[in-house]
Image (cartoon, rainbow, N blue to C red; front, side, top):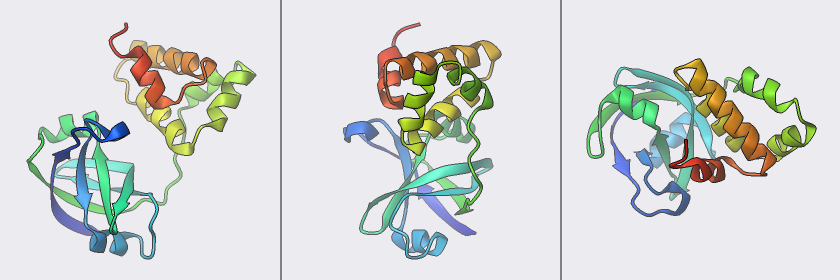
Length: 168
């Protein structure tokens, strides 16, 4: 397990990463977590008192990685850009399980499931995590319906979020 203090940063204009909150994982720490690796990999652990798992570390060059901090994590931490957190992390080798409710819905139409299966695993997980993070059944069913629509329109996760932004 690796332990370090990390500052929360936020991308200004950085393509698809615009607006992301993240922490930097130094090259030496990343190499201790996953030796000789230069690709994205998943970690688990704690940030202050918030437990997480299946979070991707993304390579940023020169051996450094970033760990995106999503809205759920930010709210749990009650911290903002510039604040420091205590990170304790290790490699997470567990297999990700996609939302059973989402899969049951998508399997109803072969073309929808075909598009979902054509997406990169990371985008499949984005949809699944978004659906499973819903706090109410109404929100969860709304998100499943939006995912189904996105698959019909051959959208990836980012395109779907942009499409529904500002719409009810």
